[in-house]
Length: 287
Ligand SMILES: C[S@@+](CC[C@H](N)C(=O)[O-])C[C@H]1O[C@@H](n2cnc3c(N)ncnc32)[C@H](O)[C@@H]1O
Image 1: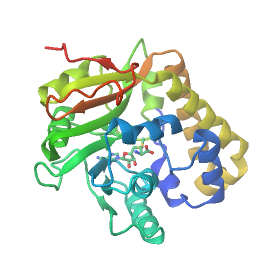
Image 2 (image 1 turned 135 degrees about the horizontal axis):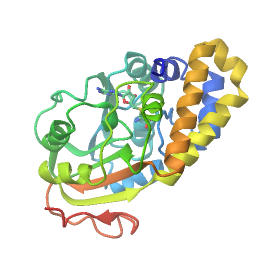
Image 3 (image 1 turned 90 degrees about the vertical axis):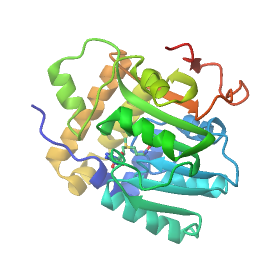
Image 4 (image 1 turned 60 degrees about the vertical axis):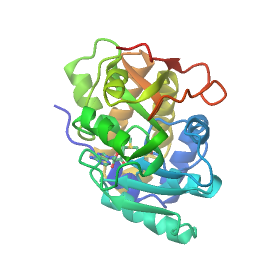
């Protein structure tokens, strides 16, 4: 059994550290405080995929230390709420909102996103979540909650890096799960559950190859700074996280674990080709 490894506490507590920042820049190109498999290209596509405008009101589930939420607040000019279960993440996110002068439009709350969300029905124009749903028990209910808090015509986007694409051993599952609670899903299940939650115009894009690239770059960027990272997080944790990142790279590179990005609407208002690139496959035919 793989020993428990911490990723998020260290990443969010050390968010401002030059070493952690250098790792993020080398991994992603642009620093939004990421702890996920989202490429900068995907980060830049999200506002268009969600149809965000300056008058949009947006919810991010699992916002981590808030860097990307604040980036949207700055570049799109919309109002956002980010929620996460990690205390250092939410604390850091609210401090950043204040220091960047965005606190009147962007704020962050501590919240377990696997429970009923603390928002009224039909509140948000868009709800999104990058690489978080795999951490939440009760996916059918989570999707129903995302649907409930969206306004009619609102748009949802989320990614799942744990779609099972091939044979995976119990050791690999243990290492891949060593940083926390995880749910693995079979291909097609997210689409089926979104359909059941009443989402429409469901599209999915396979982003496995870019997830494999991110895992490799993240691993190598940390390796280069081993001494400083061991000093910050301890050698057992450093090694554990390196094993985790190697495992993500291996499994996604061999397509035994797949990462998919999903977009859909709260009601039937076709997303259109200008919004959703052709690589997104429509799954509206599901029954
Ligand atoms: C892979 S990270 C993604 C963070 C951020 N979205 C990004 O793209 O960098 C997963 C995030 O989910 C959060 N998380 C895990 N379980 C959660 C829960 N039950 N409720 C809310 N957030 C949760 C973690 O604290 C972490 O910040």
